[in-house]
Image (cartoon, rainbow, N blue to C red):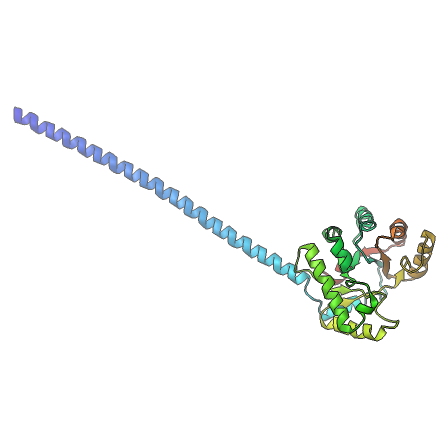
Amino acid sequence: MYDLIIRNRKLNKLKVALVILVLILIIMVIFTSVRLVQMYKVSKTINEYNIWIEKFNEEKAKKAQEEANRFATLNSEELDKISNIYKHQDNKRVFLTFDDGPSQAVTPYILDLLKQENIKASFFVLGVKAEANPDILKREYNEGHFIGNHGYSHKYKEIYATSQAVLDEYNKANQIIKDALGNQNYNSLVFRFPGGSSGGPYHDVKKEAKELLKQNGIASLDWNALTNDAAGASTKDEIMQNFYDTVEGKTSVVLLMHDASDKILTYECLPDIIKYFKDNGYTFESLYDVLGR
């Protein structure tokens, strides 16, 4: 009888030990399963993150390439488009262009009006002015206006010393524009010669410089209408009369104006100028529209 009791106790202990062992195994299986699930989720998250990072970098590289392409130097077709900008159009168009800025005294008022009228213009900025007013230049760009190049100094003797000096002025102003915009891909692409691209004592240098610019994928643009706001017109009536006289009969108008600090009359005349073009069926365009960029 005693031996039986002893055997039963041993058997019970064995059963308990087996139960405990099974419980331990079950716990280990559950723990391992949980850990495997956790590891799978972590691995899946890491893979998804890596895929997202890869797609993000691809998209970033794509946008950077698109931006670089947008401001790459002009090809021959684009150079021709700028050269032929004055030709007769079936649909009337006008390019409002402003030289010699940006300035604190005038440019912001012009920008406010253009924004109100939903018009994009083209600003041919001076490097020295862009250097002094990078915030205004950045506003011009951010609001969708074309930023062209008017050289750095506006000092004829320096600019027109040689054709290379013209290109150097372009490059100096171009770098200032890049720095002001915080965008080293940007290129101003179109140069406006101070005083125009022909005539005067520097005609031969200008002619050579135009070819040199073209060889570097840079167009040059003059105008075919003007207000004379920087050439003697000192009243609103004079500015408007010059405007009416020079715009008449043209279907593709490149209008020369200025936004230097002493040109507040230009801003004051601008509402009447805009109204004239609207009343006469003109579409407002910037040089981006010509280049298709």
